[in-house]
Length: 275
Image 1 (cartoon, rainbow, N blue to C red):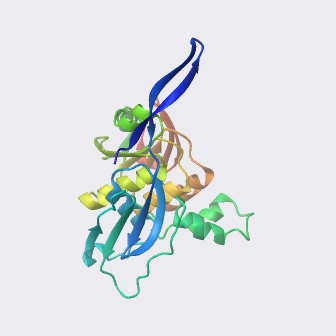
Image 2: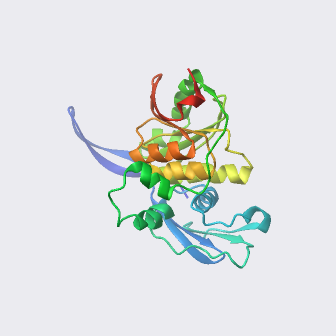
Image 3: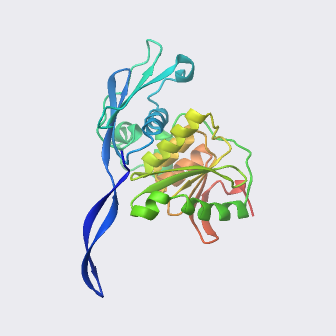
């Protein structure tokens, strides 16, 4: 299934009004099943369905910890390509999560609702209450400043679908020396990250010493997913939210925003950056 399509567009410019054929990103639902039980329905860009399903289930805590040992098999997508299933041998104690119909994460829909009776808490308190159960990321990684300067341009060159349509987010993984490893795009930023994480899981790539580069705003959900994979450094071309900053500080993630043209803001974990 193609990840983009062609539509007729009326353009209004100073030079006049005219019609052209333009490329737009496709938006298609994907229902994920675990052992035959619907788990979630995500709106996503077609392609890399296995990576998206595995990355989503892993970062949302849906998979049992023993999923690698229990054996993982795949059900093929249906002819329309909007359903995918994971068959996992698991302990009797494991129960699939309740079905979801929103692209928001489980933590958004469950844990944050739990906080609503106490809306006065500040970001530090909120981060303490809803941070993922990963402990502190105490990676001793040290990244020279020139390495960070180099990854923005590399990431931009890898976003082919964005160049074509202007409508995707990207999640790119680099090693600690700034070498490009892989990049995934999707209309939703959390889907792009889940695809990248799913690819790492399938390929056996450890993320505990890698750099994650994001093409847009960094929020709580993205930091939570990165924390569950123990990624020590998250950089973005745009701004973080206040809760993303607080959560990064709590779990030990170095968080960088506005990484553009040789400049950046470090919001958490500055000790990992060699000036």
